[in-house]
Length: 263
Ligand code: NDP
Image (cartoon, rainbow, N blue to C red; front, side, top):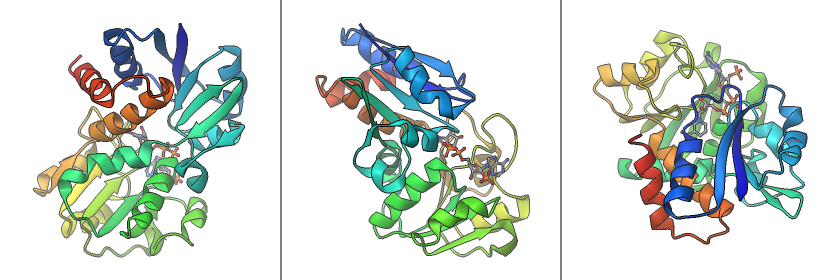
């Protein structure tokens, strides 16, 4: 029996245990998935190894610490320095990032997106912004504090803190901050979010399972919006393929993960 887990702080909101256990149970895969409340990201590696985990997901705020915890990082995670999935390969921790592809899957229905405003500059923002740039999308990043914007300066068209921001016309505004996750805060002061949403076609939030204050505002303005559930599903399917070493059919994984959303 393999054991998998999600590390985060907070972590009790995470639907990942339900999603992965639904796949394991229905497809008779000998594995179990639990959640671990980890406050100190520097303890990730020793906790992972002491629990003899076969793999893990990492959520807020430890994705950058997870990159440091790995022996080797592969694919897109290497480009962005952010890891949300770790696989135990014979005692070595191998890091991956499935968030960005999960998000691209989620916004497929919005059609041709050419210009995006990313709210936030944490691990998720890094992964998404870098992926957007790869797809030739024009990206602006807006964050509360300046220090985290350093990473984005050479990558995206423009980045701002709240003081220097002036909204333009965007196809999509996406909230990657944790504002609204455990509180009722907006990702930036009200007048800034209102301005940003003024001329946008779509809004998306990485947070799932609730209509955040950001999405409520989009709703009030009649903007087509979605929460992070499809992103969660997209990254979850890719993560499960890594956990099970591609032994299960992608369509079956998707079916049973989607079913867990009804629980
Ligand atoms: P990080 O901790 O790496 O980054 C958090 C970001 O949010 C920072 O830019 C921080 O700004 C900003 N922030 C936090 N609180 C506030 C606030 N009150 N007002 C304005 N800005 C704020 O987090 P992650 O990138 O790992 O995760 C971000 C969110 O995305 C979480 O809610 C997570 O649950 C969600 N998520 C969902 C996924 C899905 O599958 N649906 C996948 C991945 C993430 P500052 O730099 O100023 O501190």
